[in-house]
Amino acid sequence: MGLIEGLLVLIFIALSVLIGYWLAYLCKDELVKGRKWFLYLIITFFVLFLGFLAFGFYEISLTFLLMLVVSWISYVKSKDKKFVGK
Image (cartoon, rainbow, N blue to C red; front, side, top):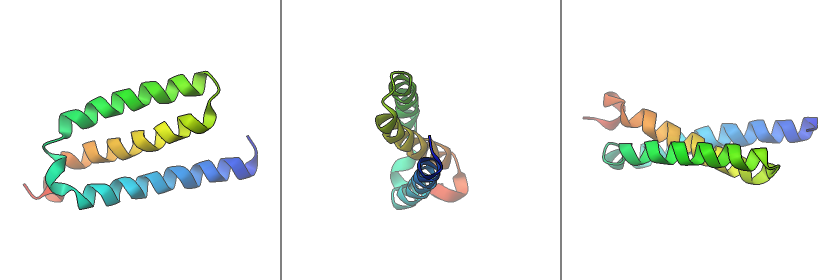
């Protein structure tokens, strides 16, 4: 992986963190109700990320990494009482 590709991956991951916080902010009322589903999504996306990465499908694995980060942020924020307001 070259320098430009590495920087693009870092930008991609940073954007996924921002998207995760933005979605969690927009959907505060759904976070608590969907907590168990976020856990299922985290496990599924982690397995898919590792599977596609192991078989050399690098670009597809980055997509699952984005979904993994967004799901993880939603799961963490669903447990934050101050954030969800309950």
